[in-house]
Image (cartoon, rainbow, N blue to C red; front, side, top):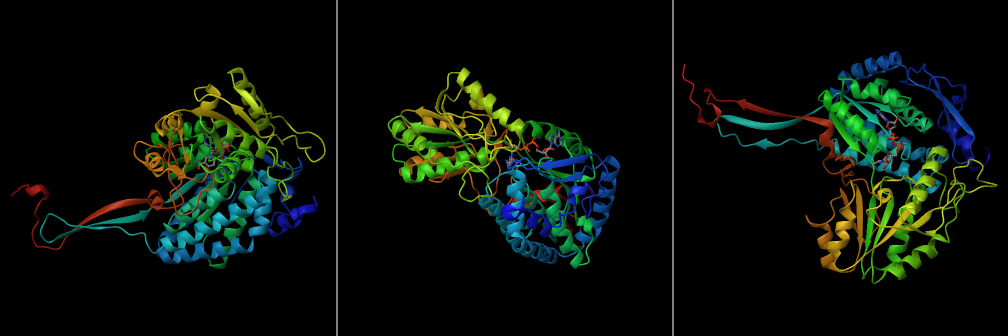
Length: 513
Ligand code: NAD
């Protein structure tokens, strides 16, 4: 595909040889079956990588555990300097990497660039953090004693990532994990393996320039079976897993069984509450971008609109009208708003969900369907759909990773809307559109939204680095990318030091010999 500069981007990222199905450079001793990566944009083969066998995985773990001994001994601010250099490399490679993300995953080029920008932002955040991994000094009850808390690196952090953010999620984890003194082993999504190889090439060059072991950053490729090597391995202190609730249920249990730590970032079922005072100028772009951006394949995508009955018709008509303006097509063409779904399985799931919603009584306001003809040859382009539905429908209770938006009414006070918003099993992102201060504060209060993310007058999708990202209930409870999320990547140690000549016991206990 000569247009849109994809070949040049692949070459700049060191992926020109990737069609050989060869080992993927750097720390990836892959000898397993070949994984072919086809673009959902045009259905063409982009490249092939080899999956990691169990033996390959063992080699990676030996390399990673050896690298940990070097890396943990380097002072945290100097580790931050390596992350700073990595961030600068990303600045240089933002366009080709953004293009690869767009071509391999299918999101718009603008969103691909946005993903790389998030990588840069988390690097900046982590660099500052590398001088702030502070513990506390705690007053001791015993004379001549001091108590303090230290934070130490964990060791190997395993990262399992989803297809929809094929580069950013890795960096959210690695940038923090690295400054904390850990080494990382990444099992990327089997649906976007080339993105992982491109990232590994970038960090490997930085490590080489600094004479540091490559094992600080490793990748293994393959499907869930390779993910299982990480979840079962006691050498992997923390498994950070991003993906479906189905996956998280298995991974969380598996890691807990061996008393490992897990950080789970799972599915969402995100709603916007639209109150009588909501400003349509904010509501329409917020809801439409939230529902159709990344073709509805964001964990924070807007799935439900809970609209006050007094403004229901007006809001419905405005949103339906805006859907008429949406351009669907090649995401590298910047005039298009919506690209393809990741693959044909996703298309079938989308079609089945629409049928299910209809069967449960849903009324279709904007028809869905698969697009055919020139430009849609991959078979992965679908029309964003809007369905009037009720919150209790089985299909509405589930996350369908596709552009289907459910509209529902509420009456009376905002508490009724909050009840609907919270009335699902997931708890990732939520939002209220209101100009009424009391409604906004109720929504943000302990009795309000039960989600990890609660916004006022912006949509559910599009989080910034700096705030802790993640959600409650079936979203898994993990937090990453901001606030004090770094603590998950470290182990806490309490130290009590006696600088007196006596040995007083805590709680005044006497033990005279
Ligand atoms: P998925 O669950 O199918 O796969 C995610 C990753 O888990 C892949 O790398 C896969 O190989 C691996 N995996 C699957 N089963 C496993 C097992 N038993 N053991 C070990 N590894 C296993 O998800 P997907 O289709 O790639 O991504 C979409 C899902 O991810 C959606 O549910 C979305 O909401 C969620 N997601 C959540 C966040 C968040 O931060 N909360 C971010 C992005 C995506």
